[in-house]
Length: 361
Image 1 (cartoon, one colour):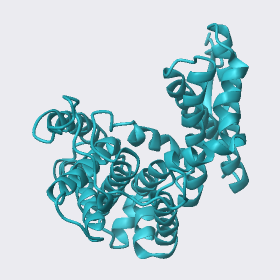
Image 2: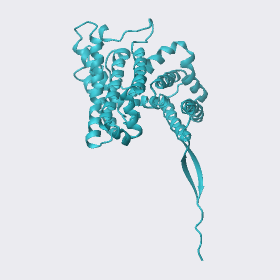
Image 3: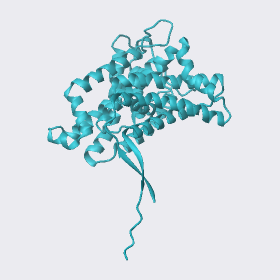
Image 4: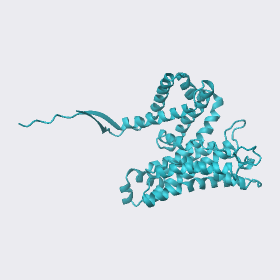
């Protein structure tokens, strides 16, 4: 009888580890072209519009910058947790709470003016995202409840809270019945850093967050603690590192950064709170984190690559009438190929034959 067995390879080279995300993107483009051709769409056209047009069209570069900023910020926070084996899957809910907290401050300060309002919104948003990560951290450290389930379920609570607020107490009385809040004022809106574009202050903030995380993870005791707890929990205990404290720090950090992304989207892109505010950035950022190898600098490039797919998907819907779900299909394939390539890089598949039992006389 033949059996398949996975055997661990020698430690892969750094070049191979960073090359596999590129191969995953190429495999996604190739398989995507075949799949969409088989179901009746222009497969090559879909790949061209999704992966090439946003790069070669200078008018789309500003969209890439704006779309990649929240992905980078959220993915950096997730990567910190994932390195500690803390699996926050509810960044989408923390992103929503960050936007809601910032909106609450905006509504309270509507009749005020001054440069202090926007920093207050940013602080409130980060605290909102952080607060939404407290319950998963508490349940994990006190009752050993899996944070994957608790953080994910809280996302749906956040969505319902958003709908209640924009349809109920926060609804704009002058909004002609639409479920939305009042528009933010000039002091509550992120400034545009490039004239006559939509590139706002959130874009450089995303880069600063990634670079700061790279420095902290590589040059600080906290970064070392996260890596040790994730790689060898027993060694971490022996070294005096508290695993529960690391879990708290990882979850609260990722929650705060997701909340920051929510603030930047609410005050930069949307300019108010609306039911369409949940844009799956929190879920897409999971792919970005792994595509960037959980490295803050790699996440910058991964965020741009994912933004290409998002912006290109919007282009393809207009030019070749590709369905909106196509972007999700490409994202799913990208994650699949990334995980598959990781498996093949770290393990080899061997076919093992089972010897027939010897017959004793």
